Image: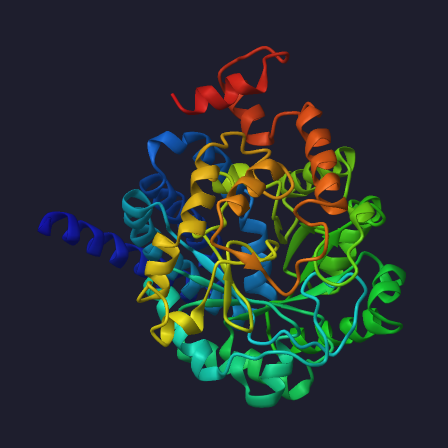
Length: 486
């Protein structure tokens, strides 16, 4: 045991030395390429050590993605050196935490690497179809409550703290909640989903000083599409905010919700080139989910559109575009399937309710019941590991082996209904009528059937694996996945 602990300590020291060397390269450009390559190699080695052999197909996709991250990291270092230093600290934390999470996953089935927390569910906009059902009035978590929650989740192995809402920068404007948390936990990253409209010069300056807050500003596509949903002039205001954040060295990105109406526009090179030109260094894609205020099931993408998004994002990665891109659903092969329910993440509403996923409009418990001793669970960690609803969620996850169809909500709605039928949950504030047994439920069944029936082309990692093995072009993609597990 002592030998294993010493080995882990030496590995952590080796990681730290690579990080420090890469930070030095920020000031010595001639060393940059070599040390960035070393960092990517070290990150790959850590994944090799921490991903179990039984998940060899996941490791195959992770290795492929890692090989395409260098252009993004070089651009980050060139354009936002202060943010780059924070990212390097975060990568160090991520690699150290991966070893902690590995042990937890093997023993408890839970290993959260991120959590989504809402410091407020209030918002200054009233966008139609808001998934959070935000209004000008609502609930807030105090800074002290946020700090306590962050301490608890970091103890569970969380490296990336994701902040949603409502509009989180309402809280930054009121009491500097976000930058106070960033200073309190400087080794962690804070990904903040925002409409961007509350960020001014003073806030941008504070974000630049802390470095480890990464705003993801919502877009609906091009200017006319964003203004149509969020309000006239919002796109232009956000463009100015991006300029402001760039001047203060903040790593800024975008968040795009894909609908049946904007999918084809977003899946164009023009869209991505505009996002890069306006300073975005990362982007997240989400499929429209009909929850919250006045949801429209007809805006859910069909199978062809979902495939278009998947293929486009992977193509952009293959082309080594200098931007980090994540696709919340299509990246199932990268993360080994659904990550909700405490397997790798969960969600806390601004009123303290705890749910498996930010898109799952049910509450399985409340953080204040835990803190104030009214719950059978004495800590948030114990809740995530032992809550009956979360355990049932993970049981259903374990029965899903198709990583291209990982989601209990839109890919396996019958599994979600089984979990709900077992009890232990109640509707959250953003659950609309018909979600479990009405019009929305029927739309879930329809889109799940479409995606199930769609034959999917192999992902790039599988193609490369097949080429190395000299398999004929017509080989079934399941052969490549099976081979990865050999």
